[in-house]
Amino acid sequence: MRSWLVRGLRRGCDFIGAPTLGRGKDTLLFSHIRLLVGPPGSGKTLLASRLTGLLPPLDEASALEAAAVRSLGQQRLDPGRWREPAFRHPHHTASGIALVGGGSPPRPGEISLAHHGVLFLDELTEWDRRVLEVLREPLESGQITISRAAQQAEFPARFQLVAAMNPCPCGWAGDPSGRCHCSAELVARYRGRISGPLLDRIDLIVEVPRLSAAELRPGPVPPEDSATVARRVAAARARQDVRGALNARLGAGALASAAPLDAETQALLDRAIDRLQLSARVAQRLLRVARTIADLAGESQVVRAHLAEAISLRRFALPG
Image (tube, rainbow, N blue to C red; front, side):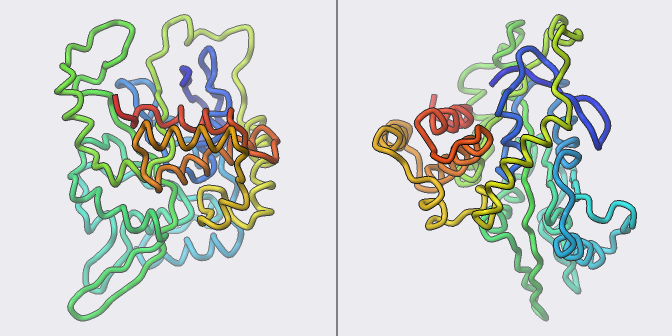
């Protein structure tokens, strides 16, 4: 991935850096689960906090559903912003109950309060691994069931997960300055704090490197503004609306119909599965991302280049 940063207000942000991410930044706006990896101060948290400002307003039914969940959680509702997607940013010391919900009577947790919005988990490797594991069910089903001795409650939890982490314990692995002295074993142990099953559910691994002084200076070409991004994303979303769901939420049958592969593209997928030892879940997630990349390019067919780009967007998670 190329270097990039985000600046601006919640309702408008510019992607700066030379060169820019291209389609990589746009795929963040289609409910794909993503992990931002970069050194301290590179803009991971700022980027995540600006994503909801680029998402379209919720339709009335979704907004009412999200508002109802917030009322159960005793959250205040701003009438002037009730159709904006929620942005929830719990601290890494939060408990499993705080994340998924609980209590007596059961109340929704952070994943439900982020329903139809964004759940941002910063410092992912600092979270208790047992707490992170409770995300696996709602990421697949879009809901969470809380059972207590006296009663059971089911809350919706259709959220967009964005997580962030440093690449190593000191935070500087891969930085051109060479200041990282973490051993390969230490880096592997650090990254191993994220379980394989949870990593399987992540679609995009976005590297957010530190920008040099030259890259931070305004260049001759102005950064791409949010209106330009929004127009391109809206066109791609319109293509997905025809299919009845965002690509990230297509089931196996709908995905096969939306992304049929020619022989060359299928051969690339087969090689990736065998050589990279990808699970069936990861293979399907690659196809969903490839379908989104094709939509952003205005292409009706997923071709080899789209799939290759989708594979490259997961390379941090690949062996070696």
